[in-house]
Image 1: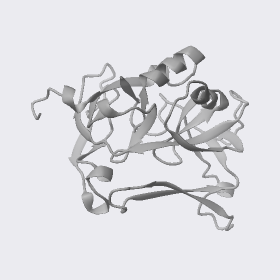
Image 2: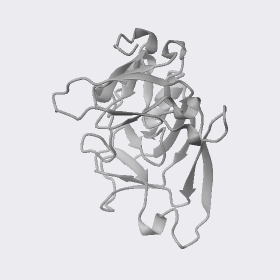
Image 3: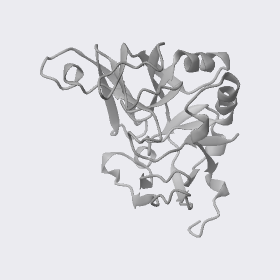
Length: 240
């Protein structure tokens, strides 16, 4: 089965994407002095070494803040890695087509722009969605020439002091170029429709089943951002 990563500029709040995140306005800031009770949510704990742990915290004033008033069915979540913001239409699609990979979601109580203006482009319910992490490793990344002249992806050796090879990976990637070809270990054994990886949770991957469902249901803000990814067995580079 084919898989795709949701591509883009590789940086948050780009004009090329629509992002949402927990409000950092003073009345909703996680570390604000008002001592408002926080809801702790365990996002990830490495099942192999147990050292790499990611927690997120919700306030009762769970507000989605978008960088612009142009909300599609899919928006990139920045409350934590490996998350996205979905409309009810998108969540219903997962149920209708028996798509897998969602592990949890929480409803936003309100939506606004970074200028604290109400969202008017969408009036239904919005959800912060958490997805599955898989222990597959990014083995290779090939930079391709881009029409936009983007800088090449910066690749560096991973520091394993905070975890193990499964949750920290072999290499780290900064500024993943929009058209970079990524090769994943054992991707041909995956049978899940949306996931992120333990070693590089900034990227979200989707199956061709999910893509086909999005096309049938007219899901917005995702189909034009897909970049094919490959199993490591297909890599033909010089460092093979």
